[in-house]
Image 1: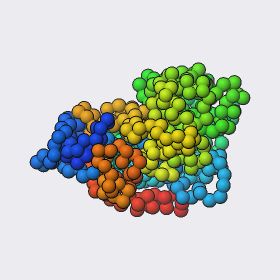
Image 2: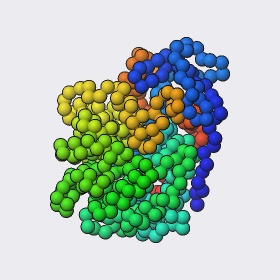
Image 3: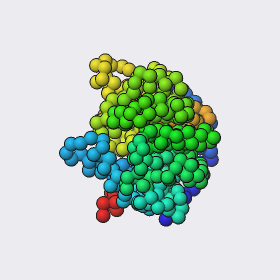
Image 4: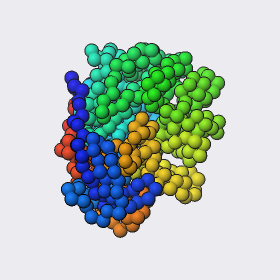
Length: 455
């Protein structure tokens, strides 16, 4: 059984010299960033040469990226679910079959490799929407949170931060018991879910949040239990919301209201809550989410891979809903692509350009994503922030010739995850010159973990 992993202490003090740095509202050349105990202690601009002893980060450095929505085991589906046609619901059956094969040890191996892939993509924190709680058939493990602990250990070993969004998942649909596949997701009641989730402990690299899988998976009368658990702990609370029109229609038939209204009526919405996808919303839904300060996590590469639709991200933000980004099913792990796709999808939908500035998209992928995961002190290059940095090459075939002063535009509209040169988490190099420092051969780790699932 995988044992909990303790994160090694942060370096006592280190100075990084950033050739170019995006500082939230501008790009500056020659920036010295001093760190101690995993945090930024000083940021000095107008530093044309590296200070003595500084680590040099050539290229464009941005704050570490936050992947606000992940299902780590979905990485096993990449390249295997593209044969033939279908819908979200047919894809889901393949996903369930993969979930059935996971154990704490195989999940640890897979998640460690997936999180290492994220680090290579410049991701320094992940929100893991976790509902694989029990053994197949629903029998609890001797350690009730064996699967969650495997994920926490995997993130530590891959060198990234994690918010484990422990997910309440109790039913197959409105008034329907869990299917045989879903039995391992369910604790039976929200109270039992809360008792098990309360056993999880935070640590330096990990925070514990909550999730309502969806309004179809948590009976309405039990939603408040999950919301109260998160409120008592001041923890983030996430929920899949209106991803599918079928769920909206079933919710209206059962409760006479939309999923967003149902969540509002049971106290789920609010500033620490994030709705994931928020694809098929009414104008009233948009006003409810924005007016309550509920966030929106868009996952464009998954939403298009599953043919879910294009959500009203621009309207949600105008209404007051902060935007974050996630790679969800990991059809692609590239937060820069997610940021770019949100803008480009809106262009396709409206046939107009320029719905967000590049800076706003980069904030969604960094500071706002971290905030959605309860890491409010991350996602900025400024004193007091966590020393999490992502450096992009400016001399690749994608970025060569870019104007360094247009750093946000280069990051969002030219670069990809393949351009990540360095990833620093808590003042420590996790990725250096494109190589992972803790998982030496990430492709081999992925191949081995996936082979073990397919045997």
